[in-house]
Structure formats: C-alpha cells, structure tokens
Image: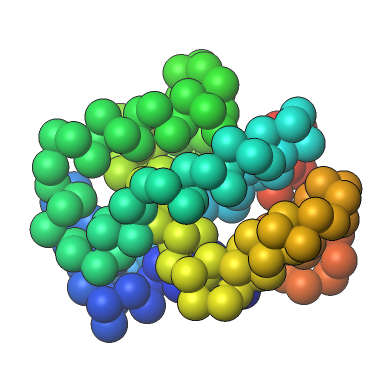
Length: 184
C-alpha cells in the first residue's frame, strides 16, 4: 500500500497533472513536490494516531467523501477543497508553523518556491485523505482496520496495522520514513 503511488497514478495521472497545471509546475516538479509533502502528512497521521486519534481517522474515512479528490481532478480547484484541506492540516500537523516548516523543507529538496508549496499543502492533504479512503474501500490495510475494529480487536493491534500501512519503504521502520525527514 504505497500512498504516494496511489495518488500519482490516480485517474491515470490526471490528478497529478491537474495539480501541476493549477500551480504552474511541470509533471516532474509536481511529482517531486508530492514525494516530499505526502510523507510529511503521513507522519502527521502517525502522530495523530499515536495521540489517540485512530477513531477520528476511521470516522473521517468512513463518513467523508475524500475519494472524490482522486476520482474527479477538477475538484482540486474548488475553494471548498482548500478549506477542507486546511481543516485536515490542522488535525494532522497542528499549526501553521509546522505547515510552513514542511513547505520550507520540501522547497529545499525540490527547488520549488515555498510559497507555492504552502498553497499546495491543503490540496495535497485532501488528496492524502482521498488515497487513504480509496485504499480502505478497496480492501487495503485500512479496510482491514475497519474489519478488525468491527471484530472488537484491541486498538493497539489496529494501530500496529496502521503503522505498517504508513511504512513507505517496507523496512518495518515507520519512524525513519515519516518523522525523521521532517521533524529533526
């Protein structure tokens, strides 16, 4: 379950193209930006879950219509998408200062101006929720999470499953993938 790959390949790459066009970026720049921003947001998911936010995440994935952001790329241009994305960022990163740090770090690694990345971040947050929603609906790890919760397994077991979902490089160590890059 690679969240970055899910987003990059959504609608045959049209979601990524839409995002790039919206911000005047080439395909390569857009992919680089996503490769920097998505792990930071996934780190926010991990932190939120560790602080007891698993139920909120599962509820958001069950009740929100987040997959629309990957199913219909034109949704990315709506003001409501930015508004929803800012709310997601508030839950995942906690403050505008952290969002600015994420954008600055991504700017250093991509050469894309941080002001563009700051504007992209809320939209990418909706895309992350869309990717997680799609993976949960297609029987992915989050789908297993929902099934496990219905089977009344312990929340620590569910959290462990979510951590494996967030392991970007498959080495079993989520911390190096998510937190080490952004919050040193």
